[in-house]
Length: 417
Image 1 (cartoon, rainbow, N blue to C red):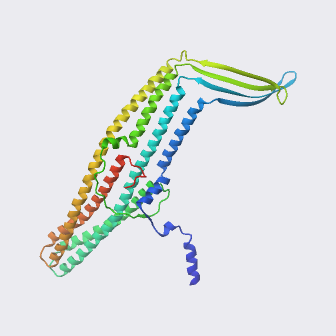
Image 2: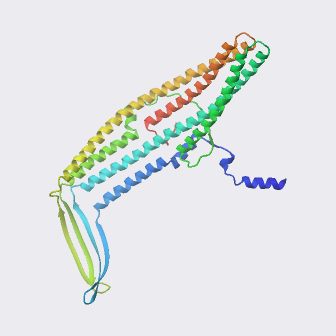
Image 3: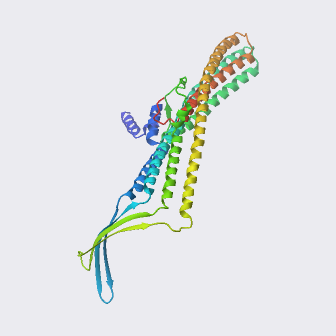
């Protein structure tokens, strides 16, 4: 027997923790894990790094471009002849009408745009994560409510069965009570199926690659909206989606100046030094220095078209920015109103639930004493069941409305409630 216990304990040590028990997650931990693992955030972060590297690449043309070379060749006519050489050469742009300077400014704006894009992505991930968290919390509570409803239906059936057997209730009432209990049992099974879907949704938004059962710790309680700053114009300016478009507009304006600089000549300086001879190491020195000037003469309208394209991109960016500003301001007002309305609805439905519970308690006593008929009593019982479900839905909807308001403000995963 002792050997059997030891063997089982040994085998259990190899079973993953997740197979033995569900993880219990808090909202703060979900935020922490999403910040670390979510693929959308990783992608947005890498985009920032790409733009930073692009600026370095653009700025590198302002510095001397120096190359080194070593060469060996063998030529054969009537005799064979070797040739060796090594040297260095360099070029430096002296003038290009501030083309590179404007490209650098555009690159800086592109970095800002990618940083705003990271914030926007973080805001969207937070909203989806919060939605998934609320959905799972609601589903967990739905299981409890479904079990409570099943208990109510079971107690009703017991009471009606006693009345039916005593000959003071008809068979239709008994069959109705049985049907109600059957439906309550079905709803328990159904909501438990939904539980796994909600768990998978949350794990996805946390950035986890594998699925296993989890539970979350939290309450379906909504904070009453305080009279916080509802200066929608200021909130709009701070929204990351608008900041991204503003940076893109600025980058497009520098793009026009860069393309216009292509009409001016480009002046470069070049120099070099090397050694060559027919044997190694080479002994014959030579060097060179010079200047170069290039200017476009005819390219079939290429550069003019590039300027027109850059201007069109700038005007498009301006229009997109204006459209987004109007949309963000409207979304802020809509979500704020919806949030306030959702909280008020919770308070109303809480009153209805309290009334339904009290009515059901009184009606059950009246029915057991024969003071009211089954048809009247079952209506009150059905109202209680519906009130429980409605109150849960309004609580979840209020939390979702709060998440929508936070998302409309552009708050990121770092935002603290």
